Length: 177
Image 1 (cartoon, rainbow, N blue to C red):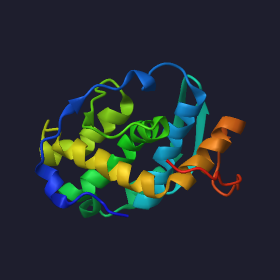
Image 2 (cartoon, rainbow, N blue to C red):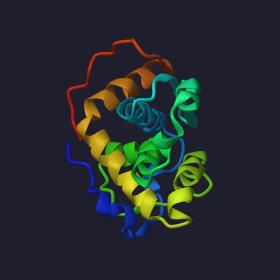
Image 3 (cartoon, rainbow, N blue to C red):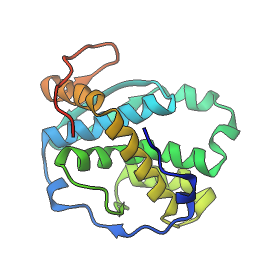
């Protein structure tokens, strides 16, 4: 897996509106969104505890005590903050991959809770700059593309059951992005 270089921390990326294909109620898209969050949690070392999805929305859960118990310096560097923010951006990036669309710039969604949490993580290092969001979204794209079968596995369970819990083994899908 090739992650974006740290030089991306200061790069200016174009600002992109969310494509029309990623708007409106859609269970498969929501399931991939939440599965993207779960896979990024696993990648950064946060234990996901579950996820849910309907055609109108979803939620991915993690063990907040892990973050509370973490040494503050773990989240106090620009690269670490950008990687943590990648967890928040992973949902919309998973939707892009699921739709077969390329990442063409920072997907700007200021009203979404995911964007707001990512902005809180990035603000101490980048202010209101979009550079940290760009690196975070590109990191999410690299990780999710590399682990796409895992995303599909979790999304399939969300589509079938509406919920996902660690330890459940859905059959792994055979397609890749």
